[in-house]
Length: 307
Image 1 (tube, rainbow, N blue to C red):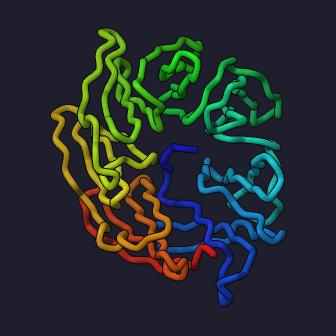
Image 2: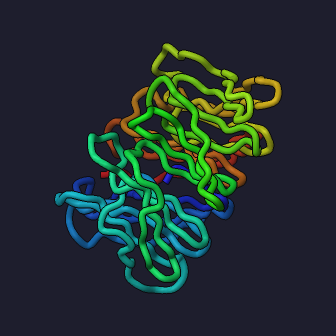
């Protein structure tokens, strides 16, 4: 579920804490970044059952993981409007990505020695089929009619055209964590330490960032490409804009000063905003810092503690 949201709304698991820090119930909220409004989507009714850290907002429906002590991660969906219970979509889903017509998913997210096929589920009929056989892992995301993933057998990134299933392959030195569409001739890849574009015709790579050494400079797995600009964040909670045409890199936001004693962090790119989410080491203070893409701090938002 690595895609950035196409709207200015995000999903947050607040942990369900209101007065007692040890409350074992989690709550999933939809937060409207534009209007600074919250909506409760789901409360976990079973103690110590939680929601995953990745969510998908697809039109008027939300997809979320729910998991407990038993093996496997369940995938549910729920409409954003009206009342109703969550609908179980899959009994096990490691990574999934949603289009208007289909859901593509891997049962396991990490690498393994057994097959991890790409499955496709028709959202209208419910029919599920094997879309592509192989040992895929780490990423599975859609971008401009392409599906990006990583094959553990030949150690290559796959760009799969969803209309005809033609595949472009690109060798990488190690595992990857994100790949995305630039144009019909190029796509972008990062493993956290390197960032490069791949020319599908010449089969050559152009490196923008290479062999990062400091852990605080490593890239996070949420990125966004828009109008030939790559937006990314680092472990230090710095947010950068990379001009794909010129190679110029500019820091546009930073909350590194609030990241020094953090327990958990995340950066989310929405349609119009950058959301930097930081939880303190005591798990009692959680704040979101909302920025525009030109680097202006719009607001700070207090969030319920995680635990």
